Every structure is written in C-alpha cells, then in structure tokens.
Length: 329
Image 1 (tube, rainbow, N blue to C red):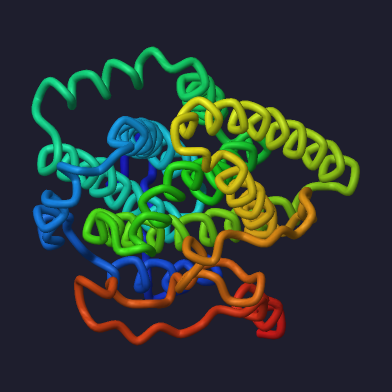
Image 2: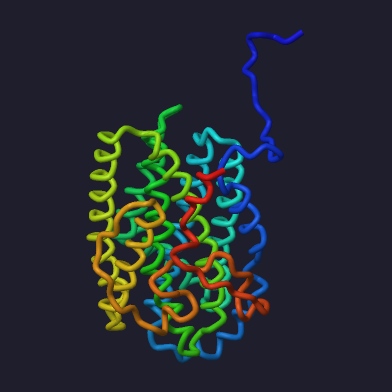
C-alpha cells in the first residue's frame, strides 16, 4: 500500500518527448565525446620554449579554468536542480560533465607546458584578478539566487549561463585560436576548438530552453526581463573590456579581442531569441577561420576536431536556429 506521506518521484521517460530538441542536444553532445589526453599537446613544447607572450597565454587559460569551474560546480548543477522538465534536466547534467572535462583540459595544457611554480603563480593570479573575480561572482550570484518553483529566477540563471558560455569565454578563446590559426601552438588550440564546439551546443541549448520559459511570461514581464538582461550584459561587457586590456596588455591585441567579444555578445543574445546590441564588425579572419559562416554562430553539428579525427563539418546558417517547424507539429 502506498504511503501517502511519501513524496512521489517521477522517472524520466525518453520514449515520450516532453521537451522540444532535448534529445537532439543530448545526442549531439555525446557524439562529440572527447578527452584532452587524446590531443598531443606535447608537440607544442618546442614552440612554447621560445614563445614571447607566455604570461598572456597562461593568464588566458587561468581565466578560462575559473569560468569552467564555476559552470561545473555551480551553474549547470543549480540550473539542472531547479529545471522542471526531466529530459532537459538530463541534458543539463551531461553538459555539466563536459564542463568538468573542459576545466581538466586546461590543467592538462598547464601540466604539459609549465612547471609547478608557474602553474601556482597562474592560479594565484586567478584569485587576485579583480575583473575575473567580478564576472565569476556576478554569474555565480545569479545561479545561487534560483528559487524553488520560480520560473523567473530560473530564466535569469539560464540567461546568465548563455552569457557565460556564448560570450564571456571568448576573450580567452581568442588567443589560442589566433595563434593556432598561424601555426603556433596548434595542438593547444585544437583543445580549445573542441571546447568551443561544446560551448556552442550549451549556449544554443540553454538559450532554447530559456526561450521556452520566456514565452510563458506576460508581455509586461517579458519587457521587464529584457531590461534586466540587457543591463546585465552591459555590466558584464564593461568589465570584460577592462579584463581584456589587463590580460592582453603586452600583445597589442586588445582591439581585436574586443571586436570578437562584441561579436559573441550578439551571438549570446541571438541564442536567447533577443535583439543584438552591437553593430557588426569585421572579425580577425585568422580567428574566425572554420567557425564563422556568414554571420551565423558556430558549427555545433560537426564531429571531433581536425587534429583529433577527420571530420565532416556541416556549415551552420541562421536557419539552423529557426525552430518554428516544431510549432507545426
């Protein structure tokens, strides 16, 4: 006899779809399964010894490690915990596991290229850099503010997650992509390209799940949340400009990085179904090579990277993110 005092738990049933595209995102993420040790980063050692801007490179990876740590330990966990749909919850849990792989990947690069003292210095810098800590705190506070059975705070957390994965990571992604595109430290850049492809899935998926919540709000509430979202983005953007100047000071690349940051801020807004904020700019072609396709976002339907395995890459167009066909069912 059922004890009526017990909470009734529901089992996830993948045979009965409860969330549009959840299975698509699930399947695609697992198709891209990879581990950092499968990339021969040690082949970069010869170039690394004579590389002029090691300090910038190490700081870039230190910053990325912190953001992925936040996303692993707080972001995906909190969003998944409060997400009502069980299939989406499963997808978000898988995403969290991949965030852990990303954080481990940066350590793998550090271990390969740097000695223990250098690694300790980088992680000490991470704790002391005010701009890096600001964005980590800003995003984490939103994650930790999700309320039980409250779709508004859940939407805000998903908005923040998209900002992190589709926007804030990219000031760090720029440098290894820029160098790798010129034949410098290419294997380390390959690790970043694998991470970037995962983050592209995460940004699109969480943005899509957020859009489904957004549709349930009244017009007045939607307008209110849009103001909140754009204010958050602007705040993060202003901090990101300072962070970029700080990290890239010795390279002279800050203007190029800032263009790339604005480009991806617009992509983050697109993932959320919102209007873009910044005008279109020409992005450094070395960085955009292989990931840009006429103003659209990244190819998250590709397989593993070029130095990992031969891949068949399907170009993404704006139509890739048109899910209106789902409404006809």
